[in-house]
Length: 372
Image 1: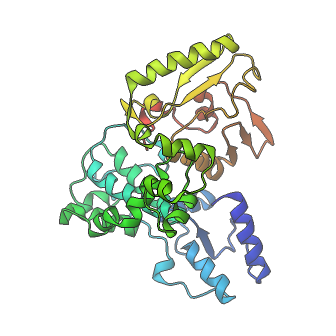
Image 2 (image 1 turned 30 degrees about the vertical axis):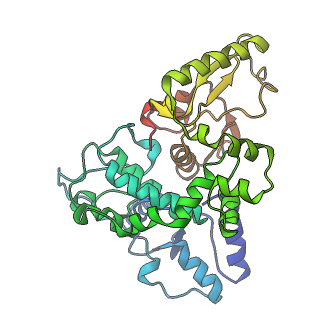
Image 3 (image 1 turned 60 degrees about the vertical axis):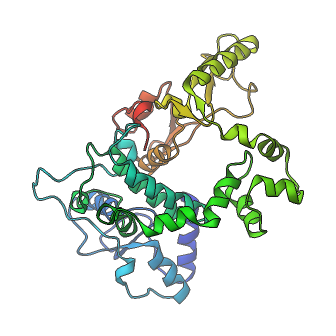
């Protein structure tokens, strides 16, 4: 969980008389986590103790903590609270192995399990529409693991040693046996899902605005026009050019746009460097937008050129996992602006992505393999 949320929950727990420690010690009896699998927590525990501490510590989902807060006392640990840990492989060479963090894995654009990942991504998107970030991230992490596998999953047995596959994700993956998932199909065909997808597809419209419109009975861009909704400038453009913006952009078109942008930038900032980012940088031949990173060899020269510079690492889950790795495994803080080492209390300067990965102790993964 994020630093601010952890601080809030820590303060809340202490105000109710709970003894909460921020670092691990032998007196700890309950470890609570949010958006982490049991395997990840187990790995963290072993890194803290040097041995398997699972028998002496409860590894629990955040639900146990919130229920305890409501009760004003530690509630009895039940099965639904316990983070599941997959059994460790017993030397079986056929068992597929996978590292827990997406930033540790190579994830190609084309993979072997698209049938499964598409199903999980639909549920992830639906969870996001319903303002359930935790569930959305959990489904995305599960899909990310399947994307990185070197072969097609043929049975549930193939998944027994893989991280990030919670009970819900595994139930969905049972479409391997049934041929389809009733939950996925009902979600895909639901009025809410289709309406939210259409409304959030409007440039300048986020989930909360789309949800408000949905609750007001609006289902499409045409409904916004028909009812005379008050729109800001970006949303007006999004509605006006909705059909055009839904059309895919090809790599050839992106290269042409890149040339135009490069000429425009060089006319006002000679020496600037322009790099095509986003999906095209990861190897996609088709996308829905064109992202650029504009830099200059002289630091600070690019300031004022654009209100906002695109982040150097653009893939949402990969970036999220990279930041999570930095915080949880290296005690560092990574943002789009800097890498900060909390132990040394200093910012680590880096000119290239390779240097960032090196600081974090990770193998460099090229953009074409960041399709987590």
